[in-house]
Length: 355
Image (cartoon, rainbow, N blue to C red; front, top):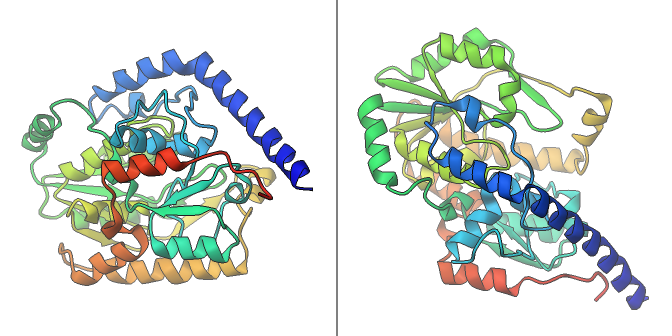
């Protein structure tokens, strides 16, 4: 029986590895050239920054490739990111509640990397028994966007003056998210922007498919920026650049960005706006429910409401209670040194089920 399980696990891993190598060989050079080109692109050139990129993953787990997660950790630890194969699964965002991505149960690797001990407890309760490493906000590990980043930040600050950065609710692969009343949202953002010289709207790469919404932001006098395409290894680097550029931040939904903003000492305010969520096809609608249940929905609501209660404020202040909730869910007090991240990477291995 154990021998059979070994064969099943190995059979699932080897095709994944071969597919990853094929993509890396086919697209690697073109992708790397485009990554480097986009590093130097003006932050307001969203057409270039959000344009599709060819997949060229360095790891078998595609989630590691999203938003520069694996690239950032390997760079931080001093490994060549394109040439290092990370034998661990990185959770590609901050998951609230008990939801566990189905791939985390079947991924044939020995470790899962996540944010906080709260998340680790949910993984344990959900039947994940492999090693779980809690390393805090992933944005902490992103490499500099450009050489001379501080000088570039100062240049933009002189251009923009006092700046508010707003993160609108964004779509995901299976669900398109749209403000129910765009005019009302723009009015709320304008109110938030009182006292600021510039308002930047950070549009998620997927939402440039809704160009009428992007044009509405531009017509309102806001400036549109983006952290880049999901396959851009400098996604987190650019997001950190934008957060550091801002004097304050805001959004209309709870998400990973809130803890990232506080990690860089930027006050954050959360507003409420009505949203429409639509799936483009019945298949997409079904995919959106994979791994979800009454329990996952309930625990998601409980945790996001706890976070929201601390950021539904009228003040541009960071409070002790806000820092506490960011420590709880983002693990802001759990950030690791380069040596610690190196040990996590070096300890990863292929995990055979049943052993």
